[in-house]
Structures are given as structure tokens and as C-alpha cells.
Length: 271
Ligand code: 13P
Ligand code: ZN
Image (cartoon, rainbow, N blue to C red):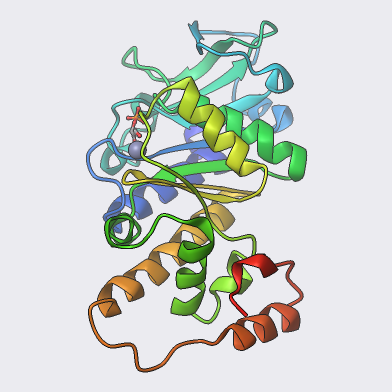
């Protein structure tokens, strides 16, 4: 059996968490990632019959029974994942009861998966119904996106429209727009259910005055979605207290979406 630390999915997780930390999006233990793995790829590195411990999840994930995930640990600092993956990450399978995580590797100091597991697994379930290729959910606290939450109306149409105006490629990268939840208590099944409901419609969901969730086929795509929102939010925050002299017109956004052949939220344009 090969060394788990050489597995591409472990390497991708350490590279992504390091990148997010470097960008200042994930202070202290802020942020978490879950990545759905194929059984065959896990078997190359781990004996899947050897369960180290079982951890109750606190909710039922029927459609994820038997599925494998690599997930960041609760209370763990993104800045430390690269140098110590075994303490900061864990790989588990959802047991036959749908409510237990069977730990196969990681959380070596006795830790467990992120406190945001409900939002992650419920979002996976919702996205897999829309896109069977979906494998990644990322939660983060990107600085400018968060700053924008305090000065911009938290309305899905208005917020998405403003982001689309900030960079030419925004409407092409996230034509489905950005869903928004009001401030809610984090770490709960309720915020998980509300996030998953939004994920039926959006790949990006803002948690008001907390952060953002993104979902996608792989780590690059999901990271790229959040990165593009964050870039647009940065431009908004750099320009919002100055007179607006120029802007991208709705007709130009429509032209972009049609040229690149993306299915965009037409109801999020004003005219
Ligand atoms: P965890 O340390 O449990 O992953 O929580 C971090 C966080 O961002 C909570 O929303
Ligand atoms: Zn958070």
C-alpha cells in the first residue's frame, strides 16, 4: 500500500489550505473543506476495513452512506495543515446507519471533523442531485467578501449584480449568481439545512457577516469560484466610496454570457 501522504487528494488539500491561509481568508481555525473521494482511490493508500474510531455526525446523510470524504478538522489552523496533515485532516466513510463517520485516517491527536460538517454534507447531498460530478465544498472567510457584507444590501439579485459589474469575467464564472443567508448561528444542523436549500440553486452561498460556501467538481474549480467573488468584492470595496464614472452595462453582461454560452440568471439583470 502506498504512503497516504503522497496521495494526490492529500496533497491537493494541503496545497489548497496553504493557499487560502496565504490569501488571508482563513484566520486561526476559520474555514473548512470537504472532498468526496472515490473508494478505489482511497484503497490505494488505506485499508478501508480498518476503522480507527467511529464518530457520530449528529444528523442523517442517507444518500451518502458508504461514501468517503477527506475533511479538515475542527479547531485546526489552515496555516498548519501542510506541515502536519495527519493531525489536521481526516478521512472517513459514512457508515450504514447514515449517522456515523468511520474514521480511516487522520485526526491523529483525537480530534474530529469540522463543526460545519452538517452544512458540508447536506450541501454535498444537494449539489450531487443537481450535478453528479460535484465533489468539493469549501467554506471560507475571505476578507473583502466579508467587508462587502457590512456595506452592501444582502439581497441575492442586488449583491450578484454588483459582483458581476466588478470584473468582466464574473458573469461567465458564476452565471448562477450568489445565494445569501442572513446571519445565523453557525455549526448547527439548521444552518446546514438552509445552506443545502440554497445549494439546490447556487454553487456559491454567502453566510451573512460570516463567510462564504462554494461547491464544485474539484478543489481548483471551487477555490476559483470563491477567488473570483473575492476579487470582485475587493474591487467593490476599493471603489464604493468614490463616484462611479464607468460601469459594465447589463447589455455587455448579456453579450458576455451569450458569447461564452453560459446559462445565467437573466432575472438578476436590471434591463
Ligand atoms: P471549524 O474549526 O470547526 O472547522 O470551524 C471554523 C469555522 O469557520 C466555523 O464556521
Ligand atoms: Zn466559518
